[in-house]
Length: 627
Image (tube, rainbow, N blue to C red; front, side, top):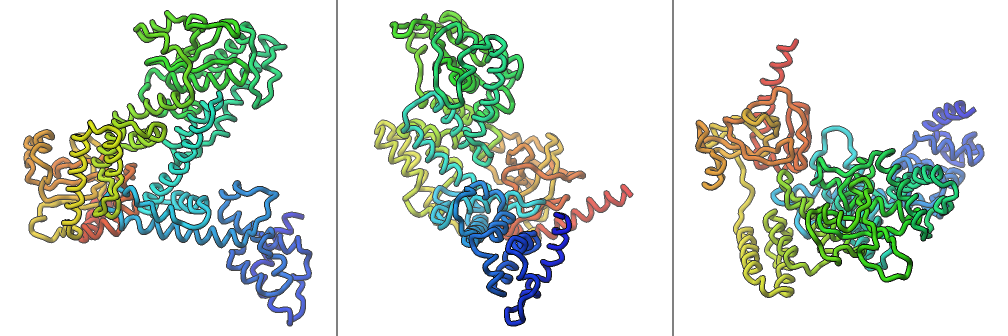
């Protein structure tokens, strides 16, 4: 019956408007159908929103069926933007026609802003105030974000520039929301669940484009807890932890019963699920992200401890976090309740080391040094998060390939959200902005984020006058240089001074010496770097030295390099270059080469024709040979 109804719907829908022409023509068979059948036909998926609008204007009967809060417009909204439906409750009254209009308008505004970013920010990083247009948008932010996600999910190798800026905007929007949530969270009183929640905020902030939620992570941990309960039931079928309901915060006081829980946790985590400390790749940021710890089943002492702590507390064992130097630990009290305790009344648990239980002496042996009793004390949520972010900050400073220093920027933001008056980190942030050239759009205006940071540092610590003065001077010099800048530099291949340039922007190349694949996004007729760079890179050892064309290239490992012409050759098997900045310069990958976006083409107006000739000669000849 359902199949017949489906076939009927497909036959009726194309003729829908024609059959319901006017009331004056007399009632048609269609409008006499029951409302449920009409709804079914109109929701069959063959009609667009425009079609529904036209149908509803033909007669009163169809207008009633297509009421703004009814099923027809709800289905139109669902089909067009399915990911948004999770934000609506089945019991809520929703004017679906109005929601459709608002979402449609938000999408148009989003695309308008994304399209403007390439022209505005092609020559520099998106500045501190570059997102002001987005912050002032009207309408629900989730609609704007949804349109950005739609752009990112566009199929194929086209719209690369749109995807590049949509990603940046979405990154910014989500980070701002997460940072505000984190600041509000830090004002709340501590409880054991807060440790996990705080860690998830850090995870979300550093991975804003990933689908990470506290609820999902709690669900994964709950599934581990259920496995522990299953094991615990085999140890002691009457164990009180087995009667705990989800969300309860009851604690067991008997040491023997607590020990049984810890034995079950160790078995499930390390023997059954094969969780382990990541000794082989210790200095990897993934070890600090809770969703990655659960997925990869590995981490470092602090992340493994938070997982262990959460499971133990849910089963009634009151473990506590210890900010032990070089190796985060948990402590388990062995003393009587209400007694005066010292550090020797605790057993210390190494979650990184498969839940091994340590004495004070063994803890010191673990790190190879004697420490004071204060370092065995319990720490609150903020201190735990400070240590996690501090680890990320250290990793960010070690970044080599990622020239955007994204991890360093993210960890600085997080640290300063918790401790906004840290002078050295404020100074580091100011230097980082200066190094990356992240300036506001109107560089002539002194209301710069970097100057704001410097002024704040000066207020906090006048002793930093020298460093602050140096950065202020260079900031102001940058503004003066921006004033003197003239229009875009255009490079024409036809000019005599460019006669030795053999390659063009968009070509996928291979480095003869190092073997890496790359795409050209700029060139100079001779090396334009300073004498120090030329000396450090040993350019003089090349047969043609620095008196040859040099090319700006995006490399597949994520780096940007400046390569001599004699070191490059055509890549006979060109593939996409997975570099984060590809979309900044190119709009499409054709399978053999990249097509420059409008801004890059303005700077190299004659290159595209040369690229077409090169592709024709190189790759067509290869195909002919293969045949």
